[in-house]
Structures are given as C-alpha cells and as structure tokens.
Length: 416
Image (cartoon, rainbow, N blue to C red; front, top):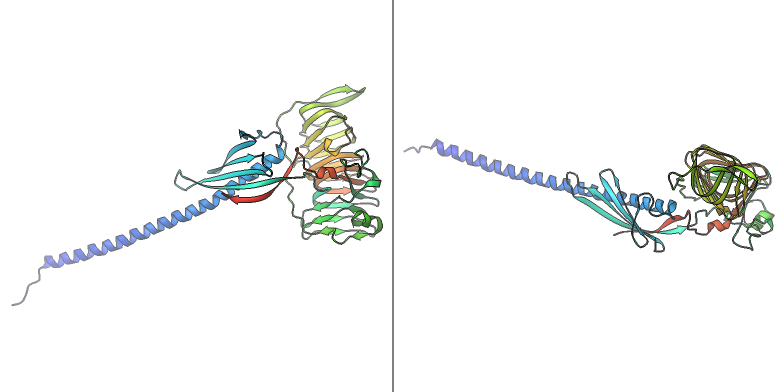
C-alpha cells in the first residue's frame, strides 16, 4: 500500500524551518547592531575623552595669562577668590567648559584645571583633570628679544649691561661705562631672523632660531667683555642657533579710566598730568608729566616732545595706536622699572630720538633708536635698529623676578 504524505505537515515543516532561519538571522543582526552600537559608543567616548584634555589645557593657558597680566589684581577678568590665596574661574568653549583654580600661596604657583565635554546625544559629561606648577621667571631676562631682526647700522653701536641694584655694576644706580658688563643677551626667534651687527658690539650672547644667522663686520664682535675689548667676530660659545621662545601680545589689564587733565607743574604747562590712578586718552602729545604712580591707556598714537617722571613716581603706558614717538624723557627715579611701555598688536612703530630709561614690550612694533640716542633698560619688539653711535645698555636688575609684570614657566605637568 502506497503511503500518503500530508500536505499540511509538509507546509508546517517549511514554516518551522523559515521561522528558525529568521530567528537566527534576527539574533545575528541584533548581535551585530549591538556590537556596532557598543563600538560607536567606545569611539565616541574615546573622542570625547581626548577632547577633554585640550579643554583642560585651555584653562591652564588662561590661568597662566591671568598670572602674567593681573598679578596685582587676581579677581579681575571674571576670577573669583575661593579661599586663602586661591582663585577660581569657569569658561564655556563650544559644547564643553573648563574649571580652573590657581593657588598663589605655593612656590611654584599651582594650577588645577578640569575639562568637561558632553557625550554626544547625552547630558553626561566626561571630565579630565590636570595639574601644573608654574615658576615665576624674570619678565625681562634678555637685553632684547625680537621676532624678526636686529640691525646695527654705523660704527660705535654697542649693546652692553649694567645693574642699577648693584653698586659694583653701576654708579648711583646709573650706567657707568667703567663698570659695564657682558650680560646683554640678545635673542631673535624667527627662523629667518638675523642679528646683523655690522661693526657694532654685543657684550653678551646672541641667540637665533634654527635657520637664523649672526653676522658681523670686520670690527664687530659678540662675546664677553674681554673679547669685545680685544678681538672681533663671534666668541666661541657665545652664539647659539636654538632659540625657542614665545612672545605673547601685550594686553591692557584694565578697562575704562579717566582722561588726564592739563596743568601747571613747576612753572611748566603740561598737556597731561598723570597724578596717580588709571587714565585713558585718545592721543598723547606735547609735554606730559607723571607725579604719582599711574597707568595710562592711549588708544591712538603717541607723539610727545617731553615726558617727565617725578622722583617718587612710576608709570605704565599702553599704546593702541600705530606709532609712538617717545620724545625727550626725564626719568626722575633713574630706573628702567619706573617707566614701562607696552605696545598692543596695533602698535607697529616706536622711535626714540634722545636718551631713554625704561622698558619696551611691543612684539608687533619696529623699534628704532636715532644716532646718538642711548637706551637704558630692556626691549621686546618685532625688530630693532640702532643707528650710528647709538648705544643700548641693559639693566640686569630687570632679570630679577618681580611682583609686577611677572613671567611664568611650567615646571611640572601631571594628570590627576
């Protein structure tokens, strides 16, 4: 007898096999999607994790900038005192933010910054925390720092040093040629920048970036005091091509300020009397006198005929205009630290035509000293030119760490 196959049973087997196949495919697809999702989350978390570090370092950068420009006013620019000698700030950048704390009672100063970045599609933040220590360094550790070039045109140009705080290296705090020293180091940081002495002399070291050059004429010299007095050319070991410095732009550490008034002082009429405090003016012209510690922001150019600083006064000048002609100066304290000039990025030209005692920090400006004009202090500029018989005397007292306008260098870095 021939057996009969039930068609319903055959169809049921096919359906069961199809269901099992679809289940296996579904499980495989679900597993794949889960793995893909997990991998995507790991990749996104890794990217977010990596992004946290630059965010934290942005907080470190702001803290260092704050230490440099607001050392005497730590609660400026949105910073809040959060304890004894501790200051706190948060700042949002894009979708993330950082929180940073400065502890100034430690030596070196301690900075802790945490960077926060949100996970994509989530309100949860990933965080990374770093700690650095920053030691104070002299704000004027070089006789001159320039970006592009140093040029000495004419015979008799010299760059040497004295120390207004040391009676063996100065007389009454003033430069004395008989006590001149060889601490006048010069640095040029551009890879195409040159130090061209002609027949001039540098009593100190010359540093250029890789690719830069130090050149001298037949009577020019770079080196120690003894070398400059007896030989020409570059003394071995006194020139290096490894300069690696940054020169940040100058910034105005305050906003606002009252315009100074004209006045009669000592029988002389002055167009502006800086009698203590914070001032702001559109231009500075004519005769100017400083009678008490003052800060002045000149939004335009400076073209003074006479600039007087009384004996017990100091001044810091911030110039936002394209040019500054500093005219004839009378520095009563006879100290470079008593007269500090800062050129903002818009200041591109600075000139002195007579002797000048002070510091110049203007990274975007070309600085020029006319023939016969002597400069006493320290200068940071885009380029510097000394003309016939002009001299440049670095006050080595500026190399000592100061509580105003300090510089900082990171001495340690660790992730917490």
